[in-house]
Figure 1: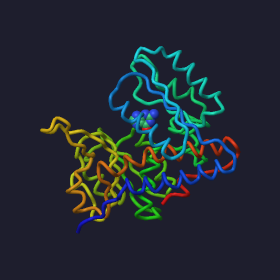
Figure 2 (figure 1 turned 45 degrees about the vertical axis):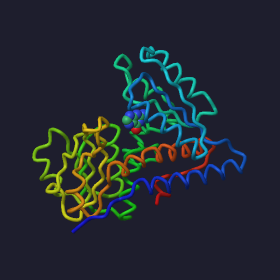
Figure 3 (figure 1 turned 60 degrees about the vertical axis):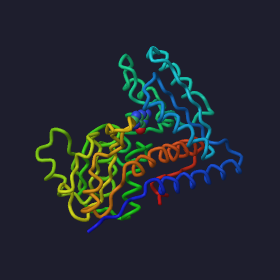
Length: 298
Ligand code: GUN
């Protein structure tokens, strides 16, 4: 048996095109384009690449992108003051502070300072809490994208066994909440779990978000399972640039799974598309209109 490759790049492009259409309709109705403020502190090369990509995709889709790049030695108080200004700025609908932050800044304090209505990362305790009790929330982008990819293969996930490997606040925990909301039976496994391969073999849905290159092997996967690989790991290569791989051994997974996301081109492109979806949702909510990205997915 050979599984299907879930084309995250194409599904993300479709979502961005739909969002661009929604923004055009808003402009035609006399509203401003949604404004996304992205804050980067320091010089982490991977973060710089992500932040640049977020700004570029936002502008391409008709959003306004506001970038703040602050030096590595920025004081926490100065970052909090910037967040307060962005909270108060009527032109800003969404605020994202790129993580990780330098060690002298408490990320939890910065996240808590963001207005929950502008928290397009969905990391603020108010949004985390709302998601967990089934109320309308801004939902973290990577798990939201993973749900859309699952639903592109199978709309009704009720009753399925789902295993999430990884318990981070950014991916693992919100992913588990979304799967519970979709009526799955959810197990959250992690580095201390006993017999991880046996846990994974139970899964109709397997989401890997651990950051360990190609850790999930073919014999960990139940035949026909849906596999979402959130990992992005760079392996050293002879060309000096290296090779991107996920947390799942793609070739082995494809031979066993019903469907699997590739790396790159799977879960990754969905994350920025979902960030834009959250920014449009936040902009609409601020003028009393609803936009539910998970209800309008592919
Ligand atoms: N760093 C890695 N992923 C993310 C993300 O989704 N949001 C933010 N703010 N920082 C990140």
